Image (tube, rainbow, N blue to C red; front, side, top):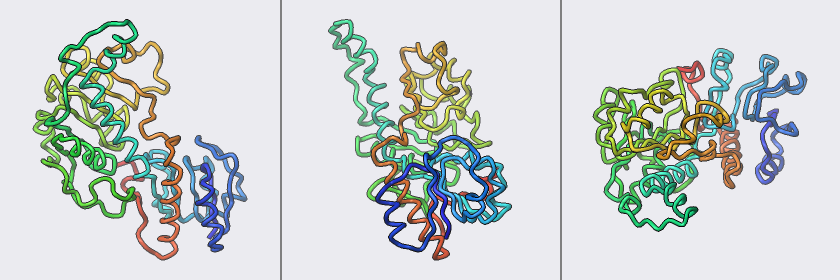
Length: 336
């Protein structure tokens, strides 16, 4: 099979494929993390494309059978007509579960104990042992909206810390199926949540939370999904964590919720503009923690190893005619 690789290399992963001797491997150097045109002759030969963004001249990939992208998000594939051309597509779901779940737990602790203020106190040599800095997570309730790999690993860590876990998902907490996961992590069987809510129960779900973790992909149906109604349904002492996509929460509604005290605070790793402009009001809000979209960064030490593991497993599955891990449906590729 002809493989065209346009991602950062994992030496061990590439060596295993070359040692197998079953494939022709064409590596583009340097790899790109933006859209670009690829030489037509190289693209025309490719049966498999391993990339972050598909090339702008994807129509030239006439032999293409499968695209593996190096991200959990897949909006870069939406609307390209892949399903109509019979091209299968998979994403990197599962590579980011561990670091993003750890970010969620870190943000819970930091928000609850107001670590931002403690650090300001340290800088100003202020000795303040107030009760606000001494709260604990155990016995609180984390609500996870969306129950894919990130949600499941966040649930596992939260349960280990003594939190109750509530989940809101369209179809209930079911076994994971053909999805990549790091061994020993997550909730493959879908049995961890203390309570499971489904579509139509959003307000009931939100009303019982101390933390809301947004763990949904950005699609047509989730763009702006969380607005004033949903934020006002949260208890005033609740915190919102968004490591998913900024646009899932309506910007104006979030700003109002933080200013007017509908919620206690927020931790945001995904934003409305990149980079977030220096004048944006979120920078100056004392009850907000901002991180620059690094919760599941591709610079994480284990990311590349896991990404190439997905690719290697899927390459074997493709050759055997087996289901692929993290395969996107025609509806997903249409942005539904």
